Image: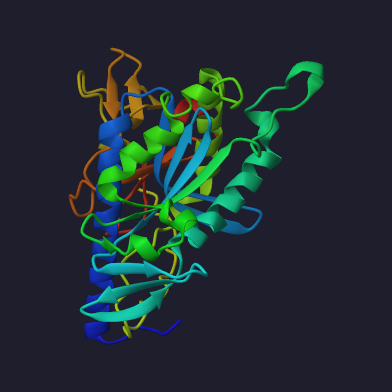
Length: 324
């Protein structure tokens, strides 16, 4: 991969990252607006895990009662064509160039995710009659590419199987509902295996445990590729930063208690519950370095990390009563 050294190249890399971040935020917004109150559809934005020495980074992972859906965000603002062999190309300022298939990228992540879940299925799914272990291989596994709303898709010439996997950001909630919601599979309810509410919760808990190494898996967002432009240098993975005063960042929003707190996870992400007054307080605080609000929270055993693009991960909260 070419190394970016000039100021001009660095500026271009920054533009690519900004565009990619915006696209992922747009998709996350549509998903949050549609499913934040649902108990049968769970959304993971920017989900990272490591398994058998391999790293996986999924822009958006949907867990629903019929299976799993992986969404690859792509900030393409020009035109897109896909030929009969599945090769992608896009235009930028009137020039066309080839790009890697986002569908293939998502399928690679899906393969590792399926392997990880299949190898550990007994941890979150029970056995059926006659002691047969349930699995995840026979569930629905879908991959979609979500492009910018302004992207022009030449759908007439895109192979039908690939065409069905490309949607725009504004249609993402409808696509997820169609596959994972109650209405789409109503006619197949007797033949399509479905997870129970308890099984869904156990799957989600297992997936959360796999993010233990997430502070080390810093995201390189999807972004538009300009023809003949150099690739940005691959970033050096920074080591996590332990803030010796991390506990001061979190306090009960009602009584101000900062010590007797319990880390929890719910529909709206990670939060702490005050052991004194019982009030829940979100862990989504502004970045302690830059003051920005685009902060992702990840968990590593009894530690909760705040991740912002401006700096290394910071230890936000440590569950002292769980010990290590």
